[in-house]
Image (cartoon, rainbow, N blue to C red; front, side):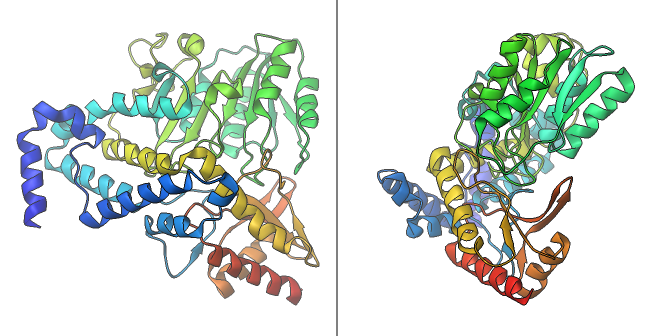
Length: 441
């Protein structure tokens, strides 16, 4: 304890000189156990990155080390990482440290010290997203990011917006409010999925375009069943019909999960939650707006220059959680130890591992594609003559496996979402549970 107090005292004496470094985490000293574990994971990562990717994804020695970085509950198997993911222990520790620091003198340490770390964080996020830093706004979640665009884009009565019944409810409700308030027209698509066919999705969206189409809303990865849509191909197709169409991408479930850069999507704007697949602190998010469109989007929380071309106009949120923002940098560090490509390959492997072993059981239906171009970690299944809520309840009560029941639109199934800390033993228990439940039916 004495060593930790000396470190903290030294930091306090040097805040003015090193505020940017503190905000980006350079002076934060985690426990020796965490430092040792971080070094071991980095060394193991360097080793597996030299392997062919099909060998790296099945190197259970490495993935067991990754698991040690999380405070995994021994009492429940968490297979609902699609809702929100846990943070690595190091991220939790840094969040606690920054929170305690802020409480020593809130207005000083939050506004004059930690806030200095926002620009370095913006740079890190932009690097991960593959875009320019002045196209990234830091906020609290995908809903805030996407709603900013939905309510901020100029639309008039009769303008058409293409949406799907499979979009996330918060986004659908935002568009419905605009329809009610501004008399725009929503053109609803009802997608068939699972489907491994780019041409179907491209044609479905393109056929809905009319001369009045102003916006196309594309959910890159559908949270209900894990279906990945060919976002770039859809965007290119609708813009080929009308180059002035604005494409908005919901990347809440694909960012830091699927290996892509935001400009690859062909979208004019996008929004994501960082507390999902980046495993950042709860209540962290990010918005991307292509530079040429920033000035034309009105901020949800206005500042003194709402028509500015500065992306920071979208960050007038009042008092916010500086500790969560700055701890996000450590989530990026952890993510970078494996990289998105390896992470996606492992998550896709885990989803296929369990789903392929139960797909031929009597009464079982898998509702998620198998191909890596169309799916990642999320997998869904149903058992004939069994409601999703009943199945979810059985998995939890009898096997202590936490999943989520999806009863929405045409979906009636259980969603299973592992993460990088999920072990093969966990999935073997899931397979056993599904097998026994199916047999009992």
